[in-house]
Image 1 (tube, rainbow, N blue to C red):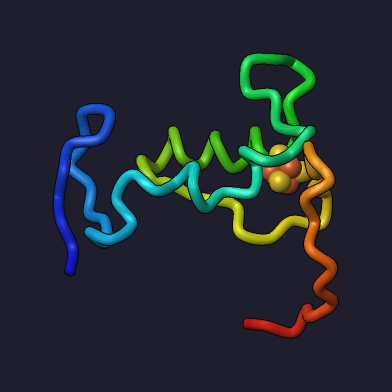
Image 2 (cartoon, rainbow, N blue to C red):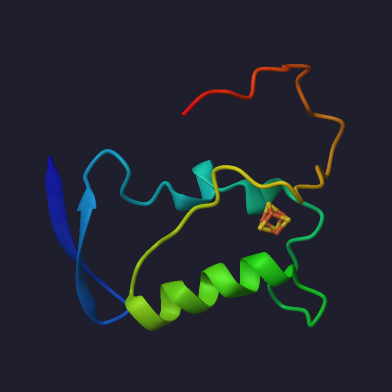
Length: 83
Ligand code: SF4
């Protein structure tokens, strides 16, 4: 099921079960490199954000080779073939 709502003055479509869940799913919010209010912010995160602003989309980062965890919270899971 999808809903339409106004996001930053633009009507957007979103899956109703994912509306407002961006931070919950995005790796960046658990990453040491994510510094959105700083010039030191991650280059990838800045590029993702630029696309979001330009295209009025929301793009959570699900997978990232540069992720640097804030806490010792990595689970020892070696599976990497999931698609
Ligand atoms: S390194 Fe990856 S997870 Fe970390 S802030 Fe950058 S894009 Fe996000």
